[in-house]
Image 1 (spheres, one colour):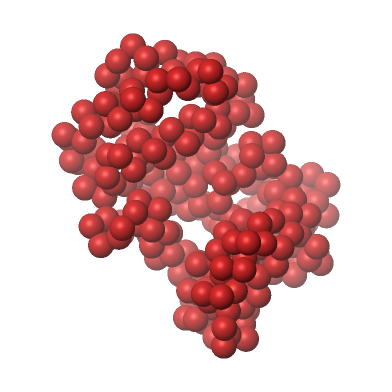
Image 2 (cartoon, one colour):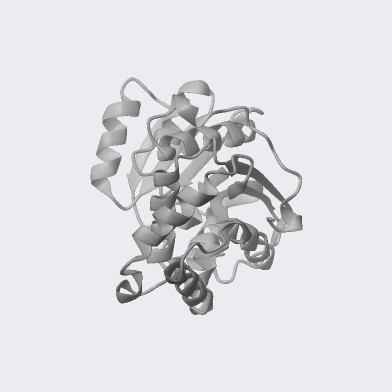
Length: 272
């Protein structure tokens, strides 16, 4: 089971079959869950680690009265976003910068969105501190992350069991990547955020292709375990996920959306 503090659950009537890849499926669910945050009145929004900027691109097209900024350190990805989404658009900008040092002034944005899972574990707290600086008092930070329902992944082989145990013995900074969704509210509260809300959309087997889920789990483990430990992980994961896929109602992943309001006098850990 996912932790009790993740309730209430938000349900999305969407099926994976309409999307070529798991990544596109997750992006669509994410967009539906974040859309209400830009529904009320004009605002300025920053997306940190935007990649090609599909999310801010879609939101800019839907909300011409607001201004959207996609920030990423990879200019090649940003160029793809500029080509795909920015032409003919006056309320969208793509900026190359580090998520730890965005270059924007204090309190510049009403809303900031970030996906902690895309960050190296040592950058998570500095990035959150930077978001506390660039979001105005009373503004909102939204963090999107995945958590694995580890209790559902009962090992199908000794290899998988030993790898899972090794991951749980990893240093806290590395192990956090396996539980980011449920851990994020604690980090936000320590940075001075208030009115923290956690919503999770359980993703079940009909939503996710077994091979895509295995690839996603492999990516997560690769950030926690050293390469020599990962030798036969791919094979073990594929066998395990294929076994789990026989139970279509089981939620193996949760897509977390954590929203928090910036307090008027936050302790941003050096961000302000």
